[in-house]
Image (cartoon, rainbow, N blue to C red; front, side, top):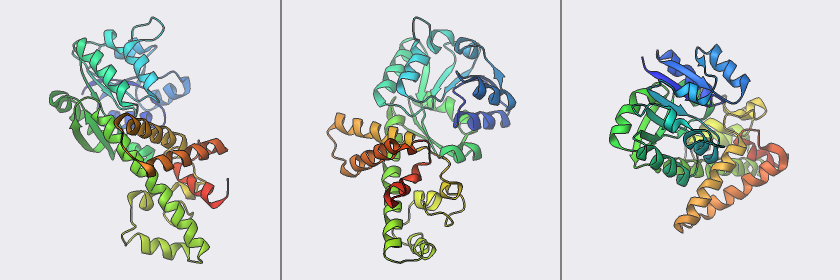
Amino acid sequence: MTRIAFIGVGNMGLPMLRNLRAAGHEVRAYDVSPAALAEAVAAGAVAAASLADAVTGAEVVITMLPEGRHVRAAYLGDGGNDGIIGHASTEALLADCSTIDIASAREVAAAAGAAGYQMIDAPVSGGVSGAAAGTLTFMVGGSAAGFARAEPILSAMGRNVVHVGEPGHGQAAKICNNMMAGIAIIGASEVACLGEALGLDAKTLYGVLSTSSGQTWMMDHMYPVPGIVDIAASNRNFAPGFKAALMSKDLGLAQSAAADTGTSTPLGAGAAALFRMLCHNGAGELDCSAVYKLLHGDL
């Protein structure tokens, strides 16, 4: 059993916490949302009164937060208050599982290292369903020693735990993955719309695509036409597995990274623009596959 502090127990964090508890770990949770914290307690965690309270005595600290500014505030402190760095024991492993910009990840990792901590960035892929099933992929940036310490804990929440390189490389791999995923769900949506316009039966077209060179993971799990793929959000009025607003955020991070490195990503740029439009049209809280509704003329 490991004593774990879990900071940020929202849509992704809560099912991850449940899997840690199922693996027998002791979890102390903190979230700014009282409702989220209450759900964590119902899942078997102990509620912490503050971030400092959560990390005191923890052997591992896990954060799952929305953006780089939240991660910086949690680790470095905000408004004169000390953050995780300083309150947690320097013996604790720090693991940020958020998806944030690479610069913030490296800034926090450098501060943690200077203060004597081991820290990894370990963003995830697999969405809420993967978090619930314990089948997430973790892309881990940091030292080999930090990865070795983290792997048994992360394996309780995911099926694939991959060391991708130095601090910040976890975020780099996640940004690349989600740019590919965003492009792929747009492709599936465009093809579905074109097939309908050409008079093709939707199930027949999917049968062809799923066994041909057009097959993708996004199509197999998130096909946007209702009644085709049982697990797809399209069968639940596009209730989110991975929100369009989060896809838009991640595509924006990819475009910032492309600009910083001088990399040409015309499909990524187009995907980012389309998801901004989707969110502007009020669909940010829907599943990212709701981009089909925009292309279909339903938004």
